[in-house]
Amino acid sequence: MPFDLDANEARVLGCLVEKEMATPDYYPLSLNALINACNQKSSRDPLMSLTEDAVTLALDKLRHRGMALVFTGRDSRVPKHGHRLVERLEVGNRELAVLACLLLRGPQTLGEIRSRTQSLYDFEDTESVEGVLRKLAERADPLTKPVSNRWAHLLSGDVIAFAPAAPVLASGGPDRVAKLEEQIDSLTSRLAALEAEMASFRKQFE
Image (cartoon, rainbow, N blue to C red; front, side):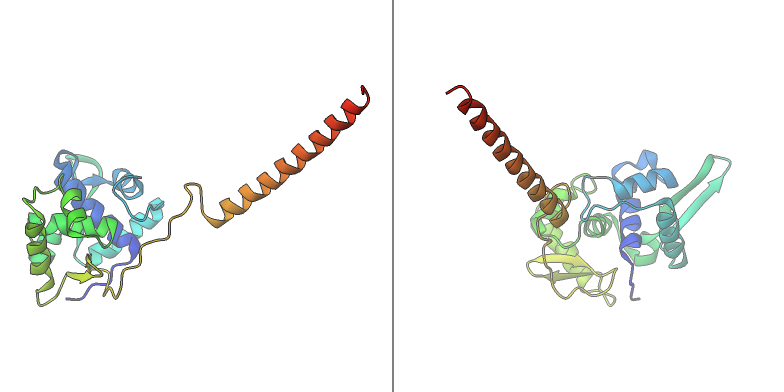
């Protein structure tokens, strides 16, 4: 049962699982709530900015795969969205917590997974986390895999290697650096011109 979720599908699916486990009173999710969950700035790697159209398309694809569903009826003013991983993958809460964490943050160490799943499932130790990961990896249709001292999910296809993202400046990387350098050069030139004017002004009173 191979899967090949794209980045948007993985983010949407991870959010549905996370919110069901962390905030069950607000699950299933409206489209608005799901968009906010996908684009939140905490507990996400990479950060994303998905549009309503992008999330809607991802939901359509997930429903086609039998991994998501929509709730409609008199009890809800707007359609609500949920996941079907329990039935589709035949997994329990321990496995769901681990998969959600990997879907939302990418490959992680055992310690990272344990600390980041605390709101979803209370693992006793990293050995417990590793046991779940190995169980998922040893299935006929493996769902996880160890990669470079980390563990990755396989719902988006095989993972060959893990390369941590290069650190970037908070406001945007190389373009930001170039703009800052231009601003520094401009300020330096203006300071030199002011110093020259001040020196000329002083000579008039010598």
